[in-house]
Length: 405
Image (cartoon, rainbow, N blue to C red):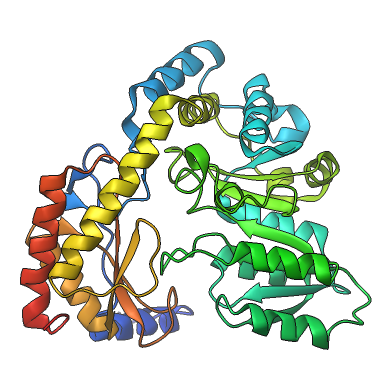
């Protein structure tokens, strides 16, 4: 019997994924991952190229701080490489409890629980405390983790216009007779625009309409407030926000997230927050480094780092404005450089990288269609000469592309 000359093409059930990827690549909106070759520093090596790093969330430069390095090394020597279990079985170490107590003191609340990421802190908390009879009133530009947590809760979701307190109150008036629990939720600092939530006015509404008030302070932790205590401290809203979410992955310099609130809230999350229940706890090195970071923030050096962060932010924004850049409502070290067209934004970022500046492009679905941008983030450890050179390079590359005139 003659052999078949060709083998029949095997059906690929994921061909639609390959097709969708091909379309994204054809549109120029599918950048490859940049690979960091060394330490996460203000000038760093990505893909073998030394660039000014405006891409990192390392606001205070703690990823390479000697106090965090020392704490991690000592923890590995003392406790080993991993925790070995989820927190509710055998994975709660003394380090974890000490970290939670330390964060609670820092944030001026009764208690704290640490999650494996800021994303799981948001998603796990919202989905644990609310159910299908409840109502969530959410800012339209809230982080994806809030959106996913709201969906997982099966509660009814109402979205108010960005930072529009009047629109939020309109929803509350229309739902005044709601039988279940009501939650107002907002980012403290919005990650794509760098603006700050109108927290005092949202707290007023929560009190007026008997709502739970929840704030995701991921990009405010280590940035706003005394020693980086966040938007609640920045606005002196202590005692008015029932649930505070923060991150350990940005200014704190390591990884993870946390939730702060009443002792009852935290004890309930220990029992019902699914990411906490079903994920292995932080390795000892990470918990120890986080402890060192909060000790640093709660010291004169921490205050100096936060002040330097803000001084660098003001300097860089001033230099960008001189060169014709506008960055909307940014009030923080997050500086969006609006482009609009996604393909142009990714091309801008690519050419910048080739010229020695790493400022990543952000397009849909992270931001809405037609609102693509570059997002630059300043750190306390950037040198003025590097920020000046970055501003010059942004202008030199942006002009031919029509980003600035």
